[in-house]
Length: 557
Image (tube, rainbow, N blue to C red):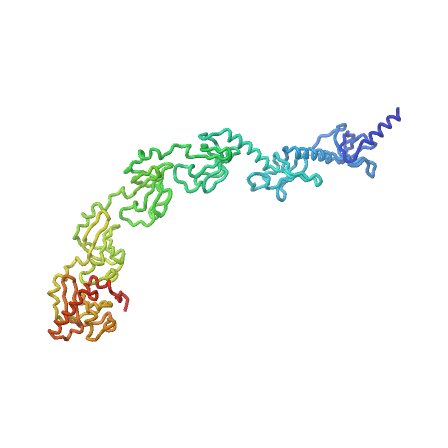
């Protein structure tokens, strides 16, 4: 019988193979090692460190990996850790083949991702941690998650995980459930996930919905970030569901009644309103009169008289203002507002304050090619047309006689209330010298004066009392003259004979060559001069300079 027992024992020895997992019993627990009997001729020793996290006792049955049947000292080499590792690896590999999920604890941050303990060490690439790339990988350390095994290398014992695929699969399932359960008009809660120029993407428990900027508020909105922030919870309404494309359109303003529905009743034209300046632009100021309702004060409606170039010169964002409703366009959602309408229009009684014929004093505010603007009171200007500066002189530009900032006296000539214009005149302060010109200048008179202007057809000579006479080029010399400048220059003193006085056309014809003519010769020259009338060579003073090619300007020699 003992022989049979020996054979059985010998047979049991032959069933043990190196690299296999076998069962053993703890024989003795020492400070450094734990002795385990696996039913072989000698026991095996396992380092005590492999049992650090376990409460073990003599007699406990454990599974160990048989590394070697006999070492140099004749002992069996065993490992509990390697047995667990092999068991875990086999389990992981089966899960990989089945496409299942595995739980694991994040151990540490490594280059390119995280190391995870799923029974064995596995690598989680940074791109596979979450749908949105994480900012700080350390926040994952020590946490337990479910992972999908995306790659296993049996030879190198490498495992690659993905948490992102797990999340995407969950979200896909959630999306389908969401799309099947909602319809337009439903109200749902979501979290702002992303903000763009055209709208906001809202996470609806795995389903992204688009809240377009036009559906965020009934009022004006420059950018979605002015109204919402990432991570903010929102109650929104489902506007449209496209199950094929998995798209959902959302509305926020639809959660409130449309403030523009009865806008004409709440803000009739002429009503005074109180609001807050929300935006300043070059052409006006936007004012919020209630949530979702803004009106525009055009820059021209800020003041009756003040010259406001930019609304920002008199208003600031956030300022409280009063205004009057001027008009409403419900379809375009526009309200026109005015501030100046709250005050009396100074142009309403302008003719009472400035009766026609009244003499006024004011400073020249601006000069233009056609006249000078004179400030009569703050914001009220009158214009002196260039033709109303002098009875006698041909003035081409008001700068010849006026300067900016100069105080002048003028007469009110005309008032146009509708177009807010006042016409002024300086020459009207005195009588018209041309009304009695024939009593002061007669044909044949010998006169002296200074050359004031030179034109291609002649020279204008300033006589007494600022009256100009014209010496036609044909009257400069007995000899033929090609250019007036060959004979005369601006500023020259000349003596000439009056050969024509035309009271109607306001011109005096002069002749230099006729200074020494006798009465008979002078009469002939006057007749010859008169024959020039149909020609453009000799025209009235008012038109003469239209044909000038060499005009004198202040500052020229």
